[in-house]
Amino acid sequence: MNYTAFQWINGWAGHSALLDKTMIWITNSAPFVAVLFMIILWFSSANRKTAMAKQYTALYTVLSMMLALFLNVLLHHFYYHARPFVMHHVHQLVSHSKDSSFVSDHGILVFTIASMLLLRKDAWKYIACIWAVLVGVSRIYVGVHYPADIIGAAVLSWGTSASILYLSGRIEPFAQFVFRIYNHLTKRIPALSKYNHTM
Image (cartoon, rainbow, N blue to C red; front, side):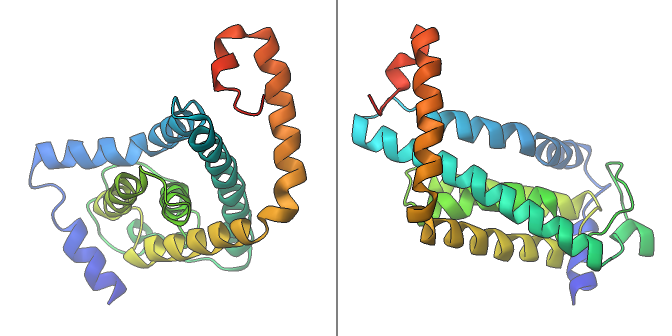
């Protein structure tokens, strides 16, 4: 079923130059859009309480992402699942190494943001979810991941996001340390002072 679903999605590749270019752009832009999400969250111009909550969301998202990626490194070390283009004839639109396919790092990147924004009930949550799904589909479309790789990334990302929020009380000293560093930074860069919501 995993390969059948892959074939159906990847089978669309190569028939439309516009669709191919769009999917390649989506898959390649994922890291840059992820950074953009973090910037939007951190440099919020909302009222103080809401803006502070968004900075916590950005911090929790980064911690969740780091945890999920670390767990994925361990998973890749102990379990190897060949990528579609290694085992089958596929429409491969982007180059990629032949490392383990399960789970997707790109999937972790986008679904961690979507999961955290959902759990934190952020205003951008639905946009983040749509973007995550589009990136996930694009990874299959361009021929470098199976659907299970993307689903696995979504499950892992949700788990680490929920865990970070559950442990938020224990994380608070680290959060305060980060905000203290940012406070010192804003004193040297006045343009950032309006985004210092802990003052």
